[in-house]
Length: 265
Image (cartoon, rainbow, N blue to C red; front, side):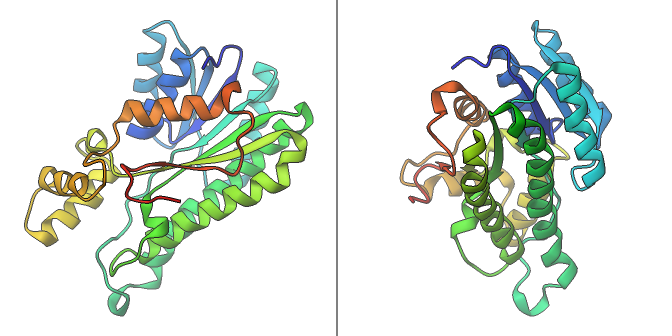
């Protein structure tokens, strides 16, 4: 599963998930362009890649800014010759645990607007560069919430379901031009619960509501899956490598489950 001679952009590349994917892409031979709103975090990931002999560059880009995304993808294609892989790994610190009766429109709209809008804009900007060359892949990340229900998770559920629907639509529309759209539906990853991360802040609130800590919450989540385990960062990253590689060129519109069997479809 080599990515030799491929150019990849990872939006949200300074986060735990985006950083893991970027490192795996670089290790597989890709030239990686890290983008996000926090230069310091992007730089740390880039340094870790370069320190192991990989190629990485950073740019401060807001994934909700259409003009900035369009210019960034175009610049990558000009600079590197082609854009082969675009990943949406951005995160947002959204509200969970609030029932419909007290959920505000702003709290509902935050994850919906952020995840769906960003993936639409990233896919549009990347596809403009990929379609003329006749190849490329756009990768999104979602969670099992897209197929679950329960009080307190409405915005996140709708956001994930929307990104998956968008992935399927992109697959149908862009397939004729050789551009693929795929998605990884990953459960919570304990390694991503680093101090100050979006994931940790979200799950800390859920844990506090239950009167337990995050470690206990993650252990309970693992027990709730048929495999009795949650995915690791390396498993997420290697799945992303496979989906971006030539080994997966017959796959598009796929929602790949990485959730211990919690969701089977």
